[in-house]
Structure formats: structure tokens, C-alpha cells
Length: 419
Image 1 (cartoon, rainbow, N blue to C red):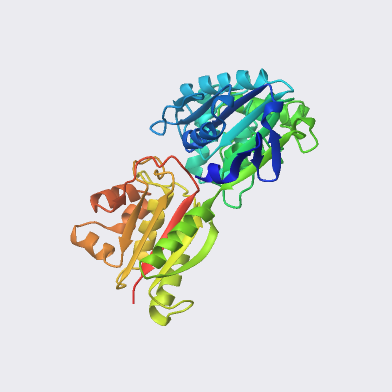
Image 2: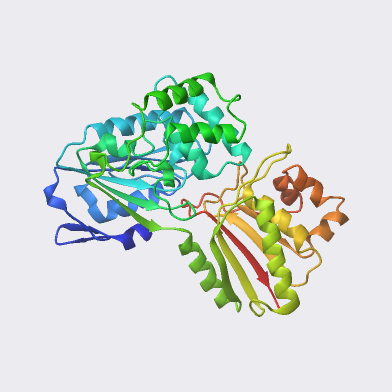
């Protein structure tokens, strides 16, 4: 729906935002891309351009695939890249490098594209990239930090996709899963200039005390790149970007607007706190909990019944041995904050249908969750200390299971507070 809203075809001209593409001017139209929403995005482009599309390839997460008529679909690993993704990325690169000056390349990007399109630089293996990605995820690095490192280990990320497609005209449609919609961070910015450097990538790994844990091949590549600068990612003045147009077709605001509209239908006053929630999940839960308690006690800053809403993406620094994800950890920490409160129900979930490495999208809790847990012999704080939120909510039968949603606009956080 979002792609159809952003694109239109009038008098043989493709309109995308303020950009206009006379479709008959191009010798070939090729569609490529990756992400959890890549297939429905590609389907919308196919429905619009039909047989004017000369071919293409999109890569999505296992379970998010489908069949298209003119664009090939490949499924691969996420969040840890796998060999299927490497093979697909190589084929996508070859497709781009065949593009000529009279070709139009439509790039479709959504959350997950970074992991789904791994194209390791020479000397760095897939296993090396898997280790680095897993270490950064476990250390609680932000998606921007993870992508800054991945850009400097890839032939596609950090503007390199635009470089491969040059001199073709490139139109990139983006479904944002990044707080603030920074194009250089979404999917590791394959068609935009990269503001980060080899030095930045090294500094991030040092900051999280990972330098001595990463593979030697990665160290060697980053050190060599920082010294020579010859393999640095393309920067803003690079000519490859002169014929590139990037358009964001949707972001977390879409889910917040939909949630607010539904809350209103159910009789709640929707109150959007932020679309930029970040930081440690358990710390964000403390702030959320404090606001909930203030509303319950004083009806400030808004009178009940209220639906307290936020969007964004928290992080988790893993110190325990449990299983979970940022949304379930947030909800478990919030359960402790709202314990004993009447008529309060809270939940958080990933809009892509998955939270961390679990099969749950998120979890739900209310003011009686902690009391019920104690009655079952469970200690919520111990589960939180072990980063074991999934085990806790699975035992309590309070996980949110949606399956793959084939989209991704970060996470949604909500608390319903009755009178």
C-alpha cells in the first residue's frame, strides 16, 4: 500500500515524489532489493509497471517470501547472514554491473536488507561477518553502529550499490526501520553517500571491547583501509550519486497513526510519547512506568482512559544466558514497574513479527503479571537479570505471536490505562 501511495504512472511517466521518469526513455527497467518487506514492495512495483520490467531480484528473510511474475525472490538468513544471502548478493551485484546509461534501476529497501545482502570484501569470509555481527548484537550496539562496521566489510553497503549500478539512473524506495529515518543507516545506506569511515568502524569495535574478539581478517581489512583510504566507501561528492533519487515511502509514523486510530475507536485517548524511543530496553521501561504511574495517580499529562504510545527501537546489552528480545525485555521490566496497578495493560512488539532470536513478536503484561508469576513460583527479576524474558513470557503464556508480517517499521510500545 505504501509503495502504491508513493508511485504512480501517468502518461507513460513514472512519478515518485518530486522525481519524474519518462518510462519509454529507458532501454531496460530492472528491480532489485532486499529486506523483510521486499516481496510486497516488489509486488506493488510489478502491478504498476507490469511487462515494462525486464527482470530483477529481491532477497527476503526465510518465511517472508512469495512468487512474483517478473522479479525473482530469494530467501536468506537474518539477523545473522548466511550463504544463501551471499550467493544472492553476488547475483544482484552482477545484475547491477550490467546496467547501462539508458537503464532505470529501481531499488527496494526495507529492514533486514543489511543482513540479507552480505557481499563480503576480499579476504573477509561470511563466517567472519557472522562473528562480527553476532558480537555487536550481543554487546548492545545500535543499528547505526552495527551498520557502520558492516559498510566497511561489504561490496554493496555504504553507497556501493549505487557505485555498482552507475551510470544507470537509480530510484530507491525505502521502508524505514531506523529511528530518525537516516538514509545512510537504513539497510546500511547502499544507495546514499556514507558519512562513516574505516576509523569509525574501528572505534565502535574498540568502544564495545570487541577488537580482540573479532577475526584477524576483519582487523587486517579495517586497519589497511584506515591507512590507505583507497577502499573507503563513496562520499557525498562521488559522481555515482548524480543520477540517484532516494524516497522514503513509510516509517514508524505509519504504525503509530494506525495504533492511535484504533485506540480511539476502542474509546481511549491516544497519546503519542515519541517516535524515537531508543536506549536500553529496561531503562526505557522505567521511564514508561513512571509516566503510567503519574497518569494513574493524577490524570496527568492526559486523563484516563488513555493509550500511551511510542515507536522506536531499544537495545539490550546481554549479560545473562537467557533467551529474549528487546520488546520482551522492555515488557518484563515494565511489568515490574506497573505491578499492582489496576486497569493497566502494556505490550511491545516488533512490527516485523520477530523479537530478537525468538519466534515471538513481543509480549504483553498487566498490573497483575508479577503477582501471577509469584503464584507460579517464578521470580520476574531473576528472569530479567538473565536476559531471559522469552522464557518468562512463554511460561506465562503472554508472548505475542504474529508470524512474519513482511514489513518492518521498528517497534511499537503501548500501555492501555483505564479509568
